[in-house]
Length: 536
Image (cartoon, rainbow, N blue to C red):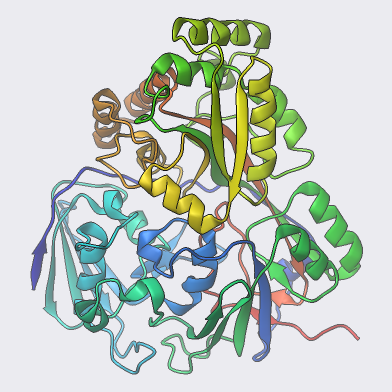
């Protein structure tokens, strides 16, 4: 079977930032221990899932619950990020012209209903991501825009035909969001995965009680022999403050997203030698998104003024002490090979270190736009560090006379308003699994080009620069194009970065076999995780 698609270009290049480990985690990383079978892993998740469908969203609230139930074509090798290995793909070949990729699937991979996975399930899942049917949205759509067709010459072979060379398409295939669904279930209902779970992953779905818990049970028919080690898992919905208490008191064993420095210290003091900690830079940043369709934020002077009023450098120093927020950066993770230098950033509106001058210019722009008495509602999520960021920017805006109401909502409402344009200004976020500029800059292009471009703006010059850097093979020239993109984006301020995050994970030392990475979106399927006995 052949399916054809059309779209925009995309590239991905992964970089491996440094990871640090301490306490029991370091000892475990060097110990040759035989995994033990059995036990229920209990861990916390700070928000309810707006959907069960990994294709349609980008939030950890879905990934940390749904991932254990699904497989992907390729994946990142545990403990060796960003090396790519096969998941349901047993092997693959690449044509010399890099326009054809052929995947040979593992035989006898079973869905949880007992049916056998075939290449038709691969085709149907990718077709749904690339060209979603009516009533289905796909956050993955821009990632696969260079795929021209998918062929299924036999039940164990899937062939991807490309429109043009995409040097990092293999990394794109390894994205943890590319869950493989049953073609038969999708044929019955294209939105089946939104409220139903049925995959080929290491755990079967048992139940979800909204506001309480999500339960998975070992799938004995999992294709990786001897795995998973756990009997099951229980993901418990709880607030960040509650999960600190629960982890400190040993009611739960883990939380996989991250804690603040103060929370880390509190938990490690409580657990003592039973604490293990991990620390890494994080492919995650908060942004200020303006609704470009709503006056006065359809005026670039207003958007730029609001950005100019924020002291990012001072905020970085102060907020890093109390939250996961830290590094100042542009649209690419600070410290990556593609990121701007501090000197380059300081030339952007809102990044200069002279705050008196910045705020004077902000007031001038507001007067010029007739918005000296600007007031608006800031929509925000009701979890940390979003709330901390919201309180910070509201205080920054107050210093130039802007009055702001802080509207804090649950994740589902946040997503609903984000998607419908039901906001004036919002604390937005964007998380990546790659530092490649195409992967991260897609957030800032025109709304009709990408589902994740939530500022509801149209900027064809940004679109042009986005395509140019994505197709540029010379790294030096590509970096120049990325700087041009960032400069244009900062000047137009459709949406602007606020601060990047630092990832700090703390868990009970009983949890073994889990891998840390600079993104909280991978290694969450849990086939390698096992539990050591409690200390006597």
